[in-house]
Length: 436
Image (cartoon, rainbow, N blue to C red):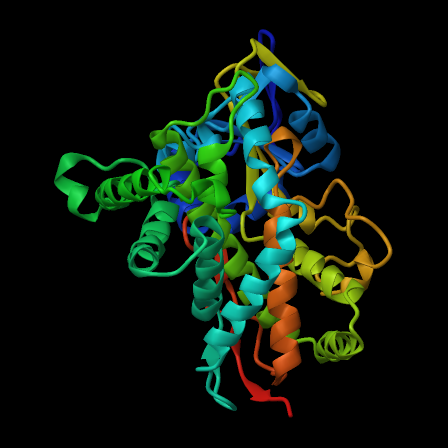
């Protein structure tokens, strides 16, 4: 095992000796396997130097993760963060008091009584999408899941359907795919800009900003604005404690955050859920029986286990802004990022017995332990976690009510990197029959 890196006031975990260029290629092409290799070699903490993120400490220990998430003003969101992609007005770009105030402002539309309204929207979208599904013929579930989750968030955000929503349905999916790749990809030199996802995303983002700006203006001038209960209307009416509200630029960036982050991760997790269920007929049978009986507990546990065993986002990170950050035995200097490897933590047998086994019963009658981190942790935990969980629950319930999923003995689908997110390599292929 490599020795820690030590100098005055700095104690870093062991560092790989691979050249930084090689580390960069490995992280971009297969971050999960690269971190897994370094974990086997160096243990639950190691140091890397990555493109975009620079020098970083990677940890896969629940105690260290908790210390990081409660480090207060010693750390800020990872640098650079998704605000680079989603905009300076996005909650991802805000820190400290501004972040807390924005989080408080955005929480009500995604929680509480409105969830019942959103459940109805999810069920309607599942039934509209599933009406076209082939019976007895295998197909990839990820694309229809993405369409369902995008339509749900669009309807929840704007409250209706029409030409504007059709245009956003066309605009958002390729934008999300390109933005996910650009988030982990360095800016390329000018001769290579034709293949640079950052440049493609910049053009898409400019088109979105112009379009969403017109929609916000139209909503501000809507004489029925006070009667509307969609998320955009709530944003326009909401104010901070000093009586001010978000400006159009900030609202546009927050809408993009909801549209992008709120549909890709949920749709991908659902594709993983189907991929897992078809290979575990006992779990599938238990789920179907529970749906028929009107229960929810086993389905909720299945969602938690899918998120544990197949986390779509494999890391959460912070940037050190104090002179140094004490983290367990390590003293990490200002300017370093600290990345919690969610994938490694979820595969830790000390936290989850027999982690290779897909077993929803591990979450029955209990709350997930601190090592369960699919939504991140601390004050930057995903603000849409409750909305996403509701969506996944209603999608599974509706599909299992209407269809019989046909188990398969095919090998498990491999992990495929979409940039930020990890998806099943064949799109979570399923075959089904309609129930009587």
